[in-house]
Structure formats: structure tokens, C-alpha cells
Image (tube, rainbow, N blue to C red; front, side, top):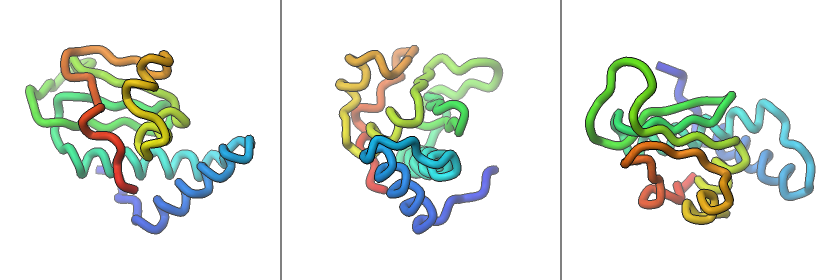
Length: 122
């Protein structure tokens, strides 16, 4: 299992990434990676399980939400998005409906919906 990100480290990386983005700058890759993984960690803590895989390439993926477990290959319920979209969604800057309507999320499967789990409280 991956090393758990400390809350203060996760919040600092998230703040740095959001400040850079708000200023129109590209966030430092290390800040972006840590922020994404920290938010995925929070999602895993909020909704543990194995029925939905949330992917934020190239930084991380996590299986969450109680339900049928898959053991091989691609899971039946997959959600994928870029880092900026994930940060906006997880922090409440945008809603699930907004990012889906904008085509910023690829979601497949009957359980591939994070609307009830967002926003997280970083």
C-alpha cells in the first residue's frame, strides 16, 4: 500500500497548486502530484470499497465505493479525469454535473458517479 500523505503536506501541496492555477501559472509537478494523491486518499477514506475506480493520470488511481468487487482487468465502473478537474471537483470549485456536462470527465458503468461524495473536505 502507498505511503499515507500527511494532512499538513497534502493541504500545503493543494494550496500551492490552487494558488498557481489561480494566477494562471502551471503548478509545480510535485505539488500537483501530492495534491491529487492527497485528495484521492481522502476519497478512499470517505468511501472505502472496490466497485468504482477513480483515475487521475499520471498521478494516481483509487478503488472506492462499496459494492461488487472485481478482481481482474478493467473494473466495470471507471471514472477518469485530469488533475485540474479532479482538484476542482474534490474541493467544490465545480460540481459533478458541471464537469460531466463540460466533457471533462470520462465515466463508464452504472455506479460511475461521484456526485454524492463531492466535495471532499481537505
